[in-house]
Amino acid sequence: APPPGDTTPPELVSATIPNNAPNTINLVFSESVNATTVGWAVTIEGESWSISGISGSGNTRTLTMATAAVEGQTVTIGYNSTFGNTLD
Image (cartoon, rainbow, N blue to C red; front, side):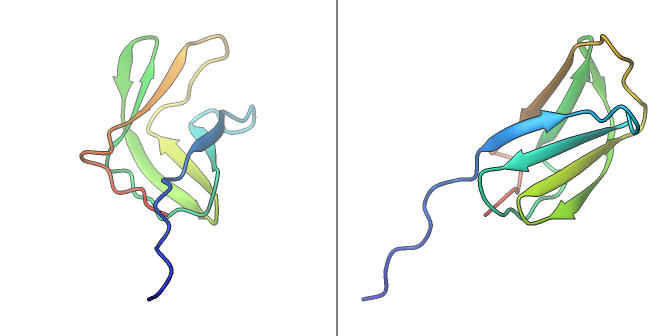
């Protein structure tokens, strides 16, 4: 019989907002992923912000937001696996 498939979901290792592109969030995962914007949510200072796109390859993805974050703001990233389709 063939060996079992990968049953460990990817984990988010880090999330950063670069100073030169404050409307993006760089995500690094524990393994390669296929991802779309479905299921992801960004809140800044408690308000929901629109995600306009996602790009990247391998274990890195960049979420692009419609509006830039400002230094000092509290940014929260959420993912709902019930609706999302980020897969390894």
